[in-house]
Each structure stands twice: as structure tokens, then as C-alpha cells.
Length: 100
Image 1 (cartoon, rainbow, N blue to C red):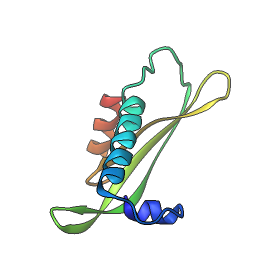
Image 2 (image 1 turned 30 degrees about the vertical axis):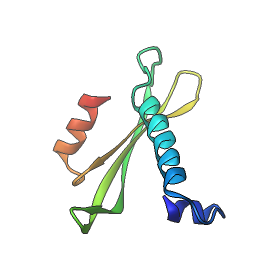
Image 3 (image 1 turned 90 degrees about the vertical axis):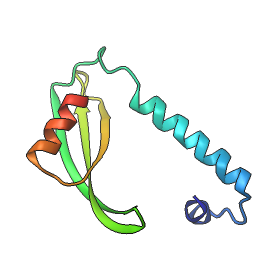
Image 4 (image 1 turned 180 degrees about the vertical axis):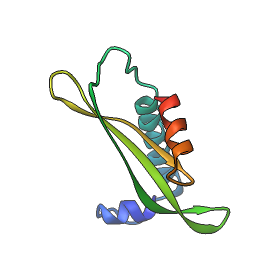
């Protein structure tokens, strides 16, 4: 969080400020992940993965982040989901589409 704040030009964050920022980001992520999608039809879906380095159990590993972008009937594009997966595979895509 401190690295992110520094990239935005914010220096010397207190622990309580970091905690408050993290809490706010967690609320935004929760709203995104739990928003209803049943009222929109997406006739077009783009699905792709990108790889990011993440820390798991003290080790840095490469992890697939699967992204689904949908285009609704009016042409509006929406990010439908962003899901980290251990690898990009048929089974990980299958899990992704069971969730969305």
C-alpha cells in the first residue's frame, strides 16, 4: 500500500491511514465482485489472461489473472470479472465460467 501511495505522490503514511485505505479498497472490490449481472445480456465476451508476480507464502510466483470483458447489446463494454488463477488452463477457465 505504501508503494502505491508513493507512486501517487503520497509520502509518510501512518499505519491507521494504510489500514483505512486498505479497508476502503476492500469495500470497493467487494461491491464489484458482488454486483448483479443478471439484468444485462452480453452477446460478446472477450476472455484473456495476464501474468503477474505475486507473493505466496513468502515466495514470488507467477500467477495468471483471468479477465472477462463483456459487450452489452448497446455496445457498452464492462469488465465482468477478474480472477487470479494458479495457471491458465482448461480447468481454470471452466472454474471462471462457473463463477460468472
